[in-house]
Image 1 (cartoon, helix red, strand yellow):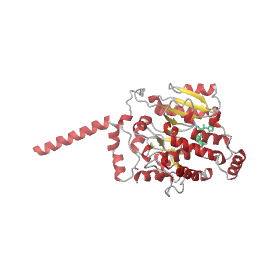
Image 2 (cartoon, protein in one colour; image 1 turned 180 degrees about the vertical axis):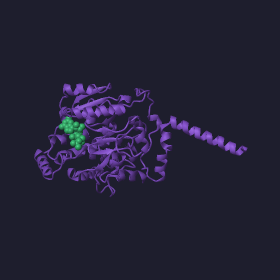
Image 3 (tube, rainbow, N blue to C red; image 1 turned 45 degrees about the vertical axis):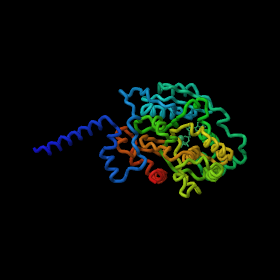
Length: 383
Ligand SMILES: Nc1nc2c(ncn2[C@@H]2O[C@H](COP(=O)(O)OP(=O)(O)OP(=O)(O)O)[C@@H](O)[C@H]2O)c(=O)[nH]1
Ligand SMILES: [Mg+2]
């Protein structure tokens, strides 16, 4: 063998060895260089926003023990009735197994009635993390007196006639208004900056070994989602007109490089009904507590649409995040496999799906459903 060939073989061998060492020691490197990742790139199939989470957000655990040194000022928040106990137990069990046994973030449970001893006992056995059970102040929950009940009742009756889900429910409207404008003002929530919203009977389909709060905090993110879809137009017939009035009154609140393109095909003239599905949310409460959102919520609340119509917290939060934050501050977490009946987000990234032992079927991920707004989000990021 001549010297040049020997030299080439030595260098080649060294490169292969370094590649294998890095593959074993660095998740991010392994993911970026995996065959499926490279081929999906070649096929042009990787959407813009499936960015890998850097290694430093995956603390090292010895046998799933606690990562103590890596915690944000964050809590889970779960709004539930006493009768939601079974579904709440199932959700907490799953998030513990898939994520929180390693991070031990605290929980805040909220209810407009005091939680029963049975509820508290059955929840408390599920985690060694701190758990607090709060009652919601009446003025944060019930229909406010400035709402004209005659008009609200007529609105409910009209929705019943049109067959709109929860059309006749006042408690559902209380819940939507509370989630829009009040949960972050609860005394138990006030000490935290970040929250992860969880509902009874949802599923977490994959291990979540990174800390989404730390990732969001260090990367200047405000709001994270896993599923985006269209709203029922009949629940928000006048909402967009009020949003436009608000923008006219306070143009200074619009963020540079905002995500209006996700909400509207007409530069803001009309709303395409796209929103982030808010039963999953990880977000920064200082955004909701800030001036722009405070004014926005108060403005909309005064219009009475939570009761005259049936405005959901999902479009309210989504419109605010899309307008008052820049699009780069909104995070799509492909890595988090999540299900709220009837829809599931399953990681698009094949490596994540395998490595995190996902139980969902990637082919049936809602991302590719005609009712999903994910393609609009991808398009916005690509432009
Ligand atoms: N304390 C309390 N919690 C409620 C009430 N209504 C709804 N919730 C909670 O608010 C959240 C959203 O309510 P859901 O009934 O799941 O509403 P949804 O997700 O739009 O509809 P579903 O498709 O039925 O799940 C869940 O965490 C519920 O447990 C209520 O009247 N009181
Ligand atoms: Mg629900």
